[in-house]
Length: 532
Image (cartoon, rainbow, N blue to C red; front, side, top):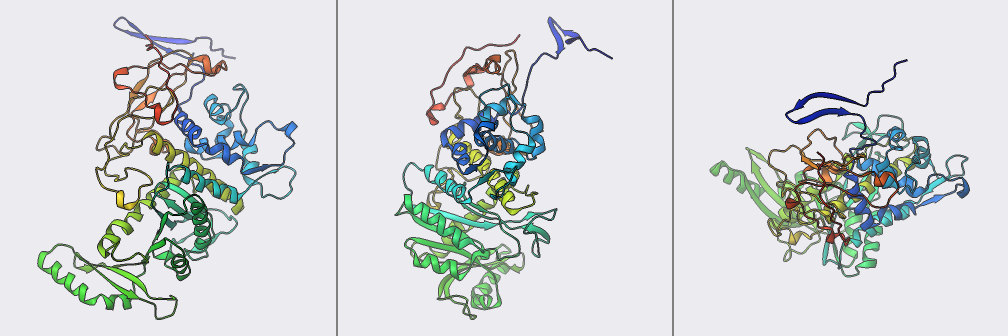
């Protein structure tokens, strides 16, 4: 049997320096950016509250992995790009993930894939092996609480975006139906956002209307928000899939709750805007450029599906020799929102929500391969909580810092009236608890995706190296840390020895600044140590 006793290989020297390949680096990880998410969670207190949404029916004397540890392990795993439970057979031995999960004894492994699987598959019924269940109502309430807590004072106005998307299914999961529009077997989850904040995520079957169940969810969300902010003005915004009388009628009966919904095109609406369309066609013929006009009128349906007349705004547009009309219906007054501003400023801004939904899929919201809808709903919750941490890091750590060229988002929960390009100065400093970090002002033009912040653990000190890493896998940190240079940090063996603090070496102190005052945590400066 071959025994490998050689600990290093020496290559040709580089002038006076030795070039050596060694195998004594100790335990390492490349997922150190998650420490930023850990600091974010300390500020938001999300994971601790999420663990309280579970009911543990296990014998306390026999429990080795607490719910808090397992929930944190699963959420951080998703944030770092590990979507499969099988990944945790190796990750359970990762010292960094033990730190993130709150494992007190770093020598002990975390929960394995089978234990995490039982956590997800429990249906709340008595079972010999699956004794942990969760409360939908508690997690739903937590999402709204995190949103409300993000404001120092009650805003005058908020806009709630509603939308649905498809989650393709490849097995025979519970509630599986074929959807003709998406041309696939899928689920049809409902999302409610306010800016970058997710307020609701509800897994639904695909054999329903797009707006099915949205009224109940809106009533719940609005009631909880009004419990904290009784005078806030609320605007619901959605596409034509939510243009339903029951939803509009409910808004009209509430105080300071308004709506702006898209409307499907039809021949009757086309006849109403015929004069304006002829005018736009003539303008397009004269200038050979796209021509756009706006008009509005009171409208009701001939089928009686609407209970009253409502204000309808039409965008009359002629482009490339063809008509391109669009319609929206709203309860907002014309004096406060003229037709053009309502469409271009308020309604068109809903497209940003689709980017937020895409970020859910970057965090594996589409991994709904469990047999039951309840288990898949929990997986959806886990990816949503991972997004809450990522979004919280973006908001707390990069507040006022442009997240990329042309994003047009200065603050995640601004009202539409306050969104103006260039309204705030950007600062190139990141919030970290006592860590010195170099931050680029913006992502340089031409980069396909932002850099991923990584951290490498070693047993011996080394320098911090800043570089761009385009090969990094798509994960939460790709969205959470845009504009940052890729960094490799070193953790002294103090952490592996069970000490509470970690010493970090750094180079380039002149370009590094600590901005931990945003998180309210005092920073700790350490002397610079450079490896030879």
